[in-house]
Image (cartoon, rainbow, N blue to C red; front, side, top):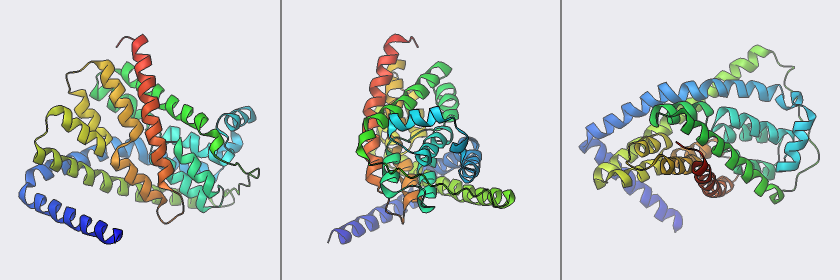
Length: 311
């Protein structure tokens, strides 16, 4: 019965969107052009090379080159093994949805258990650092300082989340990593490019769809600037924070809201994560719970810092 209701809902929504596509062509056209422009100018430079590099580093077991003292510190802080640490570190550099992508890669290789895969998704929701400092800080807010503060609170909120949930998992003692360096580097490199192309195209499709939906909804409801920002931020990070930057509110409040939008990720990012873990037993609910906690932590951290740092 529930499945039938859900299917009916999907059909109704799809027909409604189809009608809007036919009636309001200009709104849809502008949103799609904006999505493709953002994909080319922001997402490809920020994500594509990192996807390739992270794939290569996974094959070469990057954590084996990390000093033991750092691995032991992370193990005690977050209760994670070396393979999970690899996901954590690469997510900090690459940005979402690489956390889900790398989790899926290691889970498929049998290098992390299902419980470990679910656990690591909670606190590896990192936005790309270049995106935060350049696009959000400099381009949207005209302030590199705001971008740096957002980056710090974004990273700290994940770290605190990892500490908070450290006892929610039973960590296995074995850490059997099978290096793939016996493969020819050319094969690893080409394979990494193919996977990166598939992922970046998938992201383009998802971002375009949700930007289009946000444009349709805000146009139909004729929302004011504040409500439009909420809707846009709920659907997609970039347009949400861009709309936020245009509001007539204090910079401190803008940073708090932007920090919470980054922590949540928007429905677009959630769908990107889902696309990476589909057809596995990895549970999306762990990722979602993490985002709820991170929104609260990130908002509080940003507010506290904004009190002491003049913007």
